Image 1: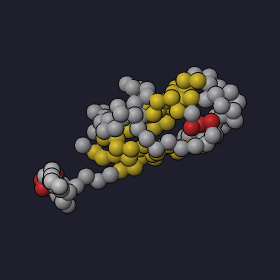
Image 2: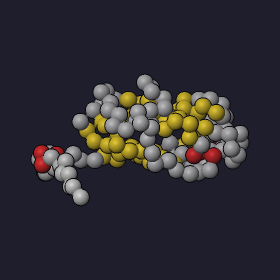
Image 3: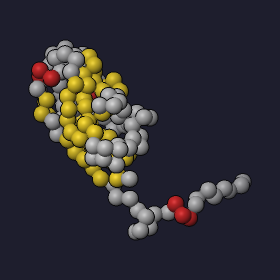
Image 4: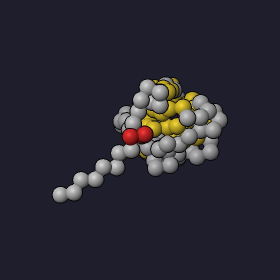
Length: 137
């Protein structure tokens, strides 16, 4: 069996070339009125020159039923990170990115938006947690 080595020694991390991963956490307190219709909710800001490598989110139990659907993105791309999530219906979490969101790099400070695309059936208030992992480029 052949073995192929595609490791480039210059790609290896060293103290002088390593990137520090940062976690930016936003903890919005959602009210029931924010999810009773289609709305855009600003929850934080990504700093300039920040490259997103992951998102972990738990929006809270914002719908006691099964109607709520939301996107997570920026002003330029409202579903850059999460598209059509129902996590707010069951207090479940999200730990993935859309293909557009992976390695999304800001050139200037950008607002992070939760966009309610389908209103909650039985809206209720909840505290959310949204964590963006990434590095400065």
